[in-house]
Length: 412
Image: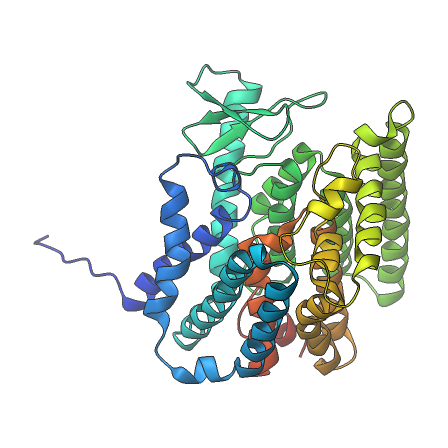
């Protein structure tokens, strides 16, 4: 046979780098070690990856010039925050730098014909399979794998298995949270994978759909169930091979069924608050909205300052911060900061031709808002990455990259 030389192509190498980069983003977005600042080697490595890889991607000053208005208004926002709440400027500046770096990296991979959307999907699928294997071995088969206890917030204690799977018992059977600090956060990642599965252009594997749906069920997240149900309706509607009238009938029945499920979930959550309304999920989330609106009303234009949770904590019965990311962002940055985030989404919707293209973008904005209302992802690199993708589409005027990649071309 002789000696063979195996060479990795430049594109394959770039795909590996892209996969590592996106894993760093996911890991820093709600993993237990990153959220609790544990002494875990992956925490500083992934944080460094978010900053170092884009530097090597920087090849064209034109990428930065495209962001001149974003940078200009972002600096104004930092100046406002400095006047309102100086302690939050460092954290907000880090998010601002990440936004620029994400944009630069996306632009670079785009020029190199790397399908970032597909790489992101593969990263999430790999995490899902690994997490599910751990779940079956540990929670179902009850194999005695060594673990250490990790203290979470309040009374939560996580069991850490080699720093890649974290478990805590809550409910009739253990909730699946995997790498992440809370099942609701993992449900967000799972629904992003489901969204990509439905709309991406590559071939679909039923096994991947199955593992995504089973994982959503085991998360036991109300928001995860609601978004997952809506996505499944769209999937069924798009894949039924029948006439249009039959499709509409099936979609209507599926919609009614999903509304019934969502209503049941809301009622069940509400009923758990009969004895102690403030101590359960439903009561806490209602309280988050009410208290957040109260804080927002004190300074509606520019908010109380990014990172300033004290006004909210003083109103909360338990002195906690808000779990509603959308409300938190609203009362901390005010109308100005909220518009800064929403304008790229709204502009992209307006610029889309009427019909399926616009409907998909409207639905994507709805999903992002629900994500933020269920978890405080506004503070995570995941939300910054999503915003960078929206800016990329807004400034390039072509759908070639990002979370919604392939949707526009699919319907054109």
